Length: 120
Image (cartoon, rainbow, N blue to C red; front, top):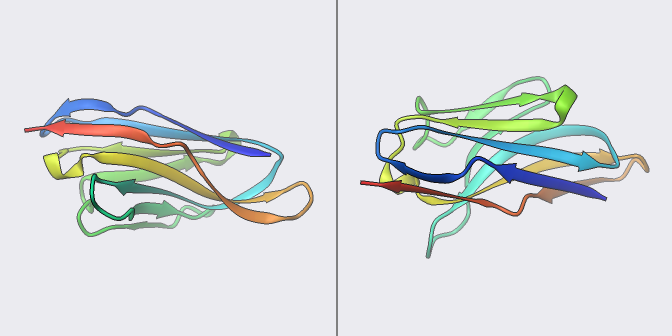
């Protein structure tokens, strides 16, 4: 059993910052790619940023230069530092992770989501 637990969401004014965290726990042997996605009301879930176990990152064009993804492999935790937030960043943010468990089975897991609201 693997769980991803997000934290750090909230309400912030435009131009402000928030830092999201997502900690993985359970029968984890290794984690490959970790990522953040978001879903705004009435829209499809979209990729925000991803990071590999080696630290290679990728970002959606809409967040490049404003958001930074990082991870602590020892803590099985991924972070998303969000700066210069805009009202259009308002969404539920989900983390996910590619996990290989003790039985050498690999699957992708999702967190429960954390709300980020940016007021204008």
